[in-house]
Image (cartoon, rainbow, N blue to C red; front, side, top):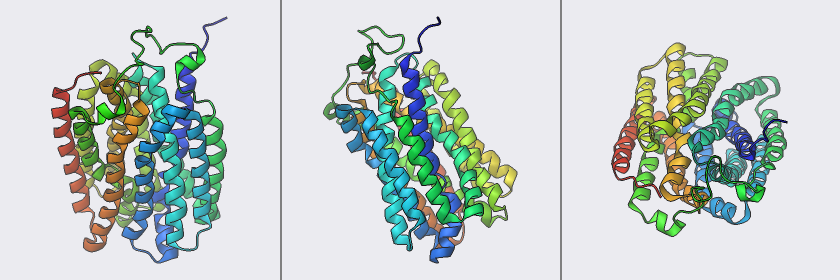
Length: 400
């Protein structure tokens, strides 16, 4: 009989599925923008608020769901979250006003991912020490695969069934798959009678700062500032890349494939770059991801054809995926795993603010100027600033 499967990899697979379902469904939104604009006679800026509201909620809710998961376990929170995602999508499909879409999609998807994402990633951190970056990368690669698979699927469903039925179908699938996989999440290796992989009891990562001390530290303040500034620009492509492509004469299906290209790059970044970060140093890796996203966004500003936009999408996805993959391990390295879910939850409120402001501001800037040049260049500049902050943080890093 071969060696028994380490249950930590089951937790990684479950977290992968939660990320795939939650973010994959959320990132289909760009495919729905033209239909929502048409049916509700809405501007691009006002439609963008739907995604921004959801993003604000799913990143800000981690400040609540992280501590709850530390106390009650990640499994319950993740299952509840997947139920809310499914319900929000289905209710958006029967909405008869844009305000109702705000409530259904924004609250359902936003609260659902907020309940599930931080608890699932927090659980993964506790199961690994030496391969924490790799395991976290595998888990969050569900976001990349979801971004690859779900927007083209949503486009096909819209073409075949209409946008309303497409939302209902996505909601039902999200609830069934998401809840079923979230059931396999276990909060701590001790609950399965084992230790984190490759770690002794002394090095198992069970200690660390309490939440109060962590959030008062200079390291946390710098990390928070970098994530906040970065997030003003990093989610703009997820809402505006498809409309940008349509504005430049690219067909709807090909435009949807551009979001899929972000998913391809993101999946590669999460699968392979997380393990690289374990070898070269996670703080230096984080700095490189900010620089890479800035460079990719600068390419977008000059791209007009499908080939150049696809190149941008792949490159941006690569660095975006690496950024998402490395954040939980960096937090755990700095502050330990004692209250890692709570600390990640507080940190991600920075991303929540950026997600709320960035895509919406980009939409309104487009409405005012009829051009995406300014919001795209601003997005690149924000990542340059984030890289500078990360460089300062890296020089002062002291593992917990």
